[in-house]
Image (tube, rainbow, N blue to C red; front, side):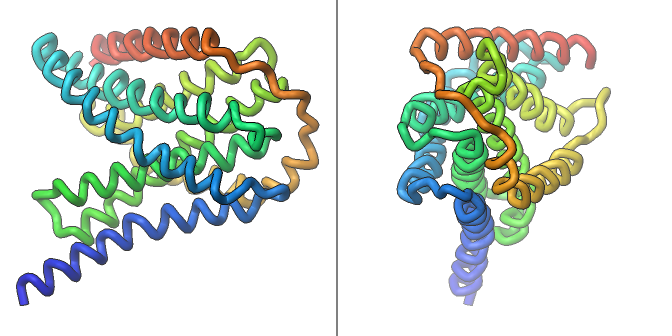
Length: 266
C-alpha cells in the first residue's frame, strides 16, 4: 500500500508539473496567426530543458566560490542576482540567440513571444522536475502545486526576453537596445523575484510576479493576431557572435552591480 501511494503521488506530481507547461506551449503555438513549425517550437522547449545540465555544472563551481567569499547578505544578493538571475537567463538568452533567432523561421515580431514562452516553459518544467526528484520536505503533489508559481514567473521572463529581442531584431527598437534589454530585464526581475524571498528590506514579491505573469500570458494569448497586423517590422538584423559577446559581458557586469547594490541596502 505504501509503494502504491508513493507512486500514485509521484506520478500525479509529474502530471501537475508537466501538463500546464505543455498546455501553455500549445496555446501560444495555436494563437500564432502564421504558425511556426511545431517541431521548431518543441525543440526550443527541449533546448531550454537541456540547458539545466550545464547550469548544474556551473552551480557546482559557483556555489562554493560564493560561500568562500561571502558570509553575509552579499551571499544572498550574489546567489539570486548573479547565480540565478544571470546564469539562468544567460543560458536562456543563448538558446534564443543561437538556436532560435538565427533560424530562418524566426521572421516576425510575434515569433519572439512564441519562442520566448517556449524557452521559459521548457526551463520551468525541467526545474520543477528537479525539485520534485530531490524533494525531502513536501508531499510530491503539494510541491508540484507550489512549483506552478515559478513556472508562471519563468514564462513571464521568457516572454519579456523574446518580445524585446524580436523588437530589436526586426528594427522596431534601434541600436540593438532591445537585445540588451532582453537579457538585462529578465536578470533584474528574476533576481528580484528570488531575492525578495530572503530579504529583510524588501517585501515578498512572489505573488506579484505570479499575477503579473498571468496577466501578461493572457494579454499575449488574446492579442497575438492583432499585434501581427499592428507592427510592420523590417528585415531582420545581422546577429553576430561579437554582439552576443557584448550583450553577455555587459549582462554579467549588470548582474554583479545589482548583487553589490542589493547586498549593501540589506
